[in-house]
Image 1: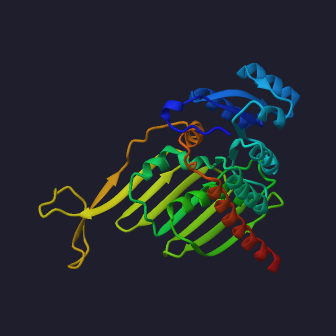
Image 2: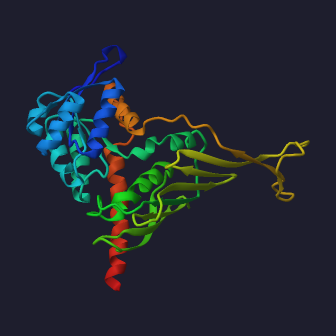
Image 3: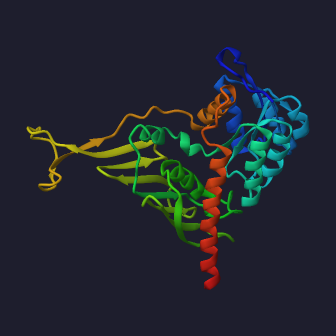
Length: 338
């Protein structure tokens, strides 16, 4: 297993990609562009697709995962979710660091096994919850985030790809992970409802998550919308934020103490003798646009190089799945009543 002790030991990380479909090709491009990896090759079962990938990226196709493991220090698993567990187990048992696309696994039990194995094998495992690296969300974290109410809408036009799982695992899990990363408190209660519209699993779902610290998150996800939307609104003491993950924009409304002689053009609220006057500040900060997938892969490299916990750890991936499955159980219990 390869772990670099300090900056002077820096080397290109030998990595291979398993799964070279639509998303896998994006990962291949990002790995090549990052400048931190030695992209050794890939594994893909489709001969025609593999031939195109070899020609486009100029890299070697390996016949199977085991052959690839012999040549790399880390693997990037971009297979369908049903294969995540099997491939990751083989990689970790060979002491390979693992980047694995979300969701972490196909079932909660598989996710638990991967979490335990990562610690036993002492390897770095990062889960591809890419919205953590959305530039609008990164900018929002520069503020003091202590929301007491969160409202999220993740709406997508219908696409048959992904309908083999509930919309909770397909789309809502992004916002579950974002919410858990912001709210540093245990979950107290969950209620949820959902409807199967065009597939055998829920296509639209709503969940209400209550935390011990009093925060409430109201999450809505749909894959049968007429338009795409990925918005999160955060409400907290003296401020409100709207994060547009799709447009990569951030709006901030803040209240601060009004000066004794305030600008006459300023918007000022008189909250009474106890709270005094507050000035309303509107901010639309400039967003430094980045490639979120490339950034998460670069940080995966750095977690190995500096021997640090990855920014989205295997435990984070499990925690998001745990909440997702509780939501799906609530939805299923309601459908059974009907």
